[in-house]
Length: 265
Image (cartoon, rainbow, N blue to C red; front, side, top):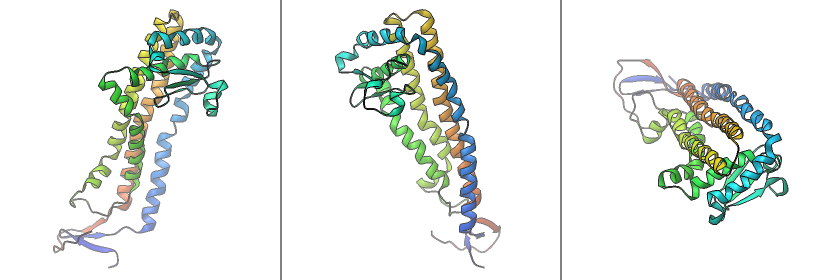
């Protein structure tokens, strides 16, 4: 019979390319469905960011003071007003902000979202003025994103071995890719939380009034929700993709108690 081979005394039917393609289509659809809430989970943060814009002049004054209070200016950290800089559109328009650890620049639209700047100063503190543990978390951000993305590749990679075959390192990664994707994002979430905490403390030291400090806490907690959701939903999406591809691509057991023939692959 075409497409049949034997392993460890059992008979298996190989899956066809068409079946594998069907699995890929279904896995992609399910993964997309699981990740779709992310488009909405970021809205509470963006809405809160918009609410804080009328108070920007107060935030801006304290934000500039916070740079000196932190001592980061002595480490070469600069604030770059994104509205006047040659940067990406999202930074110019005030829908995002960032700290670049290589250039030591905090890029933020200071005319709109200075409230986000304290958090970015928190990132700068994590990268430049922290002990080894937090510095490690800061350095794990981009590898974390990379590993989490790579796990989707392992999730959809075809499985040619039947269950019970000897497991290689690649097989073990495939079997646990959902967990790995989730764990890879935890340092990102943790570093974001620490940056927010330190940013709020800087705002207090710079003289931000109590009510706006409360608003900052609300803003940053909503931002952290989006990062936590990415970790959870990303891990679930990879896990679901793996399960689907496993079902559609692993050789299917036809019958037991056959004679033993061992094939290498």
